[in-house]
Length: 78
Image (cartoon, helix red, strand yellow):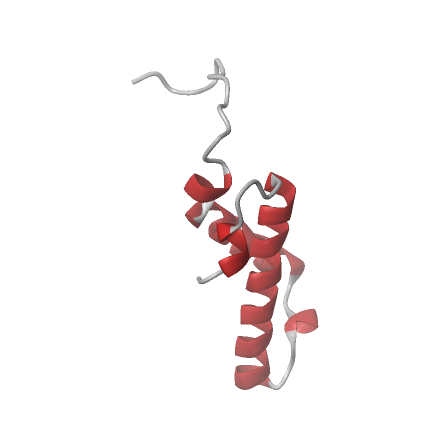
C-alpha cells in the first residue's frame, strides 16, 4: 500500500495511523464499489477494523520506528 504521507519526517504517530486508515477506506471503497455497486458504508465494521489492523501492522516498523515498548510480563520469553 503506497502512502506518501508516511514519508513525512516527524509526523505524529496518530497522524500516521490516521493516514493508514484513510488509505484503507479509499481502497476498500473502490473495491466494494466495483464488485457490489456499494461503497464502504455497506462494509461490516468488524471487517473494516480487521483491514485497518492488518495495514497498521504492515506499516508498524515505519510508524513506530522511534518508539520503544516496555516488555510486559505476559509476553513469551524466548
